Every structure is written in C-alpha cells, then in structure tokens.
Amino acid sequence: MTAVGSNLTSALSVSMLDASRAALERTRQSSAAPEARSPARENSAYWSIPTTLSASSLSLGSVQEANGVAAAVTDTAAAGLEEATDIVSRIQQKLIQAKALGANRPAIDAEIGTMKGKLAELVDDSSFNGQNWLKLEAGQRPKVASLIASLTSGERGELSINMIDVDTAQATLVSKEHADDGILTRSYAGTSMGGVPYDYYLMDVQSAVPNGARSREIRVDASTNSDELDGMISALNRVLIDMVGASAEVGAARSQISGEGDFLEGLAGASDLSSESRVRADLGEADARRAAEQARTELQGSALNIANASMGGWLKIYL
Image (cartoon, rainbow, N blue to C red; front, side, top):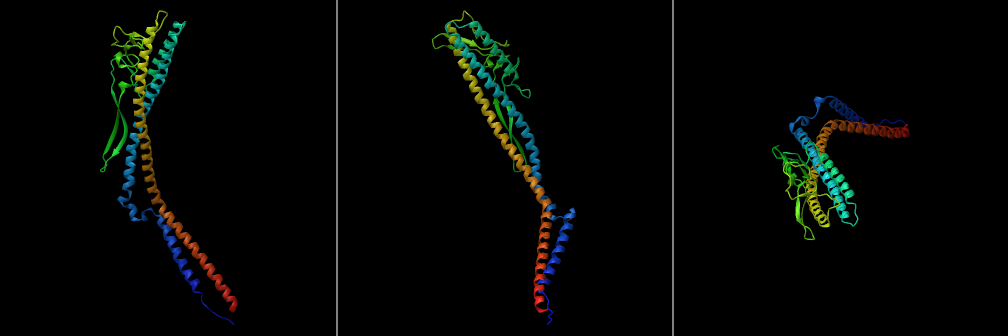
C-alpha cells in the first residue's frame, strides 16, 4: 500500500526558517551600515546626558587636581606639626632631667641645641607647592589660605567653586618678621607653680621684631637654678598646648578636603561610566539583535529537522 501525504509542520517550519534568514540578513546589513542606525540614536536628546556628563567630568578633573594640591599642602603642614610637637616634648623632658641633682647641664643644653636645629630644618622642609604654613620669612605676616574643596553645578549648568579657608596664623611655628607670630619664637610669660615669674621663648631666629627685652631664650648651663628650670618647663607646656591646638585646626581642614576629594573622585568616575555605558549600549544593540536573529534561525532549523524525522517515521509505516 502506498500513501501520499503532506507534512504541514514541515511546511510551516520551512516558511518560518525562510523568514528568520531574511530577518538575519537585514540585521547584518543594518549593523554593517552606520547610516542605517535607529533614528533615535541620532536624536540630540539621546546624547544630551552623556555629553553634559563629559563636560562636567572636565570641570571635575580640574577641581580634583586643585583639591589634590590643597590636600598635599594640609598633609605637609599636619605632618610637620606632628613631628615638631614630638621634638618640643623631648626638649621639655630634657629640662626636667636637668632638675635632677648632679645632672650634666652643659651636655643637656647641647642636646637641646641639636633638637632646636632639627626643628629649624623641619620647619624649612614643611613646604609644598611654594606654601609653608609653619614658617614666615622676613616681611611676611600670617594670612588666611583659601583652598579649593569641591565643585557645585546648578540646574542651568552654572558652576560654583566651594572653598575652605584656613587661618595659617594658628599653624605658624617660626616667624622671621614678628617673633610673636610664631609659636616657637614668641615669648611666654607667667608664673610657675612655685610662684616664680618667667618669660621665655624656645627659638631665636633673629626676627625683625624680636621679643621684649626681659624675654630669654630657653637654654641651660651650670648656673641655671631650679626656679628658672620650672619657668622654662611651664613655658614649654604652653607651647605644646598651642601646638596641639594648631594640629587640631590643620587636621580638621585636612579631613574636610580629603573627604571632598574622595567624593569628587567617585563623582568623576560615575560620570565617565555613564557616558561609556551609553556609548556601549548604542554600539552593542545591533550586535545583540543580530545574535537574537541567529539564535532564532538555528532553533527553527532544528524544528524543521525534527518535523522531517517525524514524517519519515510515518512514511515507513505506510510504505
């Protein structure tokens, strides 16, 4: 017995396969021709966001650079103050040792002189980008330093630079103009715990306007008595208090600038990522569409093979 029949499933599969192959060919041609991209991608509104972000990134980059300089200036000042405070603390310890019975005061004075020399070198080296908050040269007076912290963008694209003001007078350790402007060069007068008046300064840098005639530099020798040592120790205690306060002020400015720097870095990265993602999305859409058409064509080809195999089984029965 012979039977002739038509396989509707196979016919449908062939029709779908032909349509998929035609769609795949159109997708490939569209991907190969840049001018055939979707009109939406040519719309200025589509690119307005990434273009604005790119322009903002340029502004952010400039502010980031200025913010980095500001952070380096404050870091340098903070590090100098911290190390200088440690040296002054050790000088105070030497003065306490000098009160001991039989102490070698000339040797102690030599050590103090060496530490004063280290202080001078440290202050000179605490400079970055031409700014040294710890030292004033002859003719200079303390000032307020304005540092760039961040950038604010308004709704209409206007930009505002946000500044941080730091009073460098609080951080000045040495002044060659007015001795009273520097923590280490100014004179500290008062009365010791024993009721003895004192008037001492730590370093003499030959300031144009020196301390008063009654003020004396902190130094010891064989003739230095216990009351004088008490006065020197008390004066240095006040020096240390002022230095700790200066470190706190500079440290607060450094923390604020560093925090703004981290925010600016993250914001700039987000802007770059948004622009890059928009471009990648536009360039990758055609590839994704082509891959989808390819997958559909392959699936429909498999369906046709299954349908033919099924029809072959029925033919064996009737033939």
